[in-house]
Length: 544
Ligand code: VG1
Ligand code: CO
Image 1 (tube, rainbow, N blue to C red):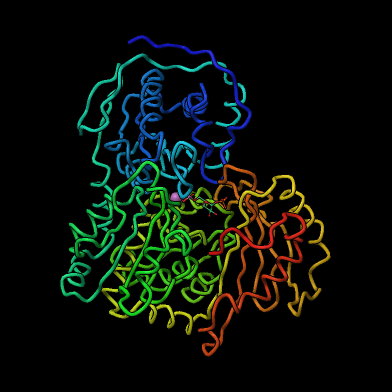
Image 2 (cartoon, protein in one colour):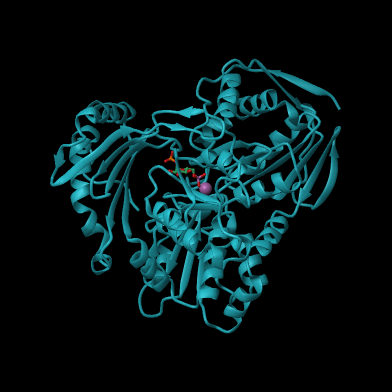
């Protein structure tokens, strides 16, 4: 096998964001663009030479082509073995599971997660380290540094590699294993959850559910686990065939984009339980009959009920949430007497805490929850956690959530996203906020007294690394909070996220409409940041 060295020129824009490098498909298709990034992974992650790499993606447009490119480069770079999901498919949590289970040297996941797919939409690539988790900042920065000075990459000449037939085949000196993308993940789920009990619940007809795979990666996983193994009625999984363009949809499991399944959970003939997952299968939306469970609440309910679940029956060591996630889980941690960590946005910040066994459960407001079973957030896992809980407690979702609020108080929560705004204007808006911070504590904004105002910085308690400039927090004395940050996953202009939270301890006031409760904070947040004049937007693009 002849190794071909290709001369290339560095690109200046390959710094990974919140979760890997995400760009338009067209950009990835530009000559050498994907190759440069992949070579930078091989150049910095030297243990891959002679080691094992896991490879797969969410099936979006350009997934197969990218896998062919990466396989040829892996062979040229001396990777001993590559484990590829059949058809080039692996959900993000399944990839994490396989990286860990087979003690590999890491994985490359191709996904732009909840961003739309297709020739004119988005693509992405990220590297996960041998712990199964997204590479920490020191690794992504090393890869980025490499992309800035790269001058050549290695590949081999070969025909199309068969990605669809399970089994091992040689590619030069490298062994390519095409593996079942679902089996290892399904086995892990069966280990964590009481499948017998969930099956009984479905068999007895006590619970009807719908799971919206949004034409993304979780279709095959959900069909196998929910319908074939647990006996949920055929048709439980909707939009279950993965498509390269997600059927033209936006595979983001929230009230706006997953409206089909939301509708099935509302009204007279509503199902008892519904859920949706995103492009790469790490996010989930949880719905009960006529109730939407906010991701922040879902995390808190899970923490408070973990002892009911087989895989967590021995208790949890601690919890963590990203900074903008509501503080609902903090109160559960306090009641349980376990630690609670507040981390910057992005799953990579949970890795050290999970590895050090300081936490068992963690989550983000952006529809992501997970545990120490893998090192990614995990959409189907969250769904199975809820199913197991429903099978044990035998109560409707709404009852479980309302009882939770009565005990711990309710954190009303909403997020406003202003997508595709001018990058300069977005940066100026953040600077303008930053300049006001020092003067805010002690002042009163529309009746809300400011307790603290800062730009969040995080010192990792395990390795001492410091991450600054992670978002602006304004906390009020009644426990409510406004957070502003700029997205690190978008591919066009800037996205401003405004996160709002209000605490309500009084059960008599906990059933109010979220929009009504949040309105005063929305007004404060909009005025303080001068959003309308600075961005030209009167309304956000998406409210979740
Ligand atoms: C968003 C979310 C963040 C999440 C990230 C990746 O990042 O806010 O919580 O970890 O997406 O999720 P940002 O920087 O755009 O706010 V996924 O499912 O896109 O891998
Ligand atoms: Co995702």
